[in-house]
Length: 171
Image (cartoon, rainbow, N blue to C red; front, side, top):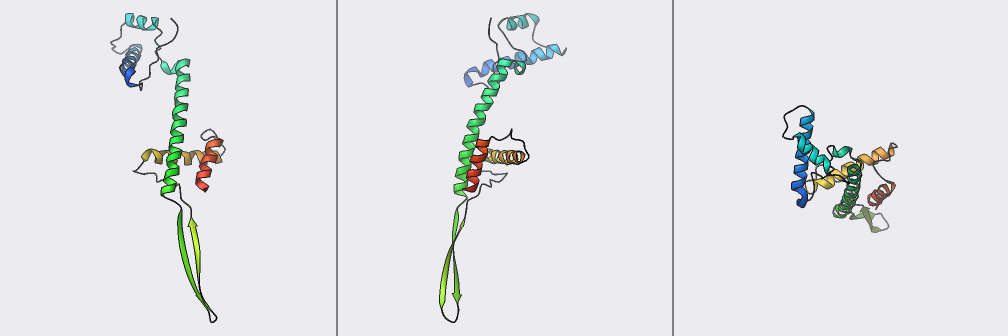
């Protein structure tokens, strides 16, 4: 039989029961191999292996590829979602404009000068931001990746993400 049984523990609701059963079988298999008391008998092991059951899912190349793909999609979706939240945060906490009036008098005249002082918004989400702790954690990770990037480690942040964050920071 071709294929493998690599059901994820955090599977959707429809397969959650199967996922827990799969986890349980792997747990019992590990206990048996360590010499502990296990509810898994040799016949059950043979039956599961006959249908392609994978005992060490994380070592299975198919599982690893699916896991990489899942993480990639979660990371990209989560990153974009948090990036958009950061833009909203900056709009809410930023772009202050003040009018400053300075009066000047001398023997010849009296004048009133008005200056407009613009202070751009900030992206300084506090580390403990109770309104959205996920955003706070994400910003904290982005700051760490930014520093790592400046030190030469480009694995944590792509060029595209770096420039997107720079655009938000400087706009």
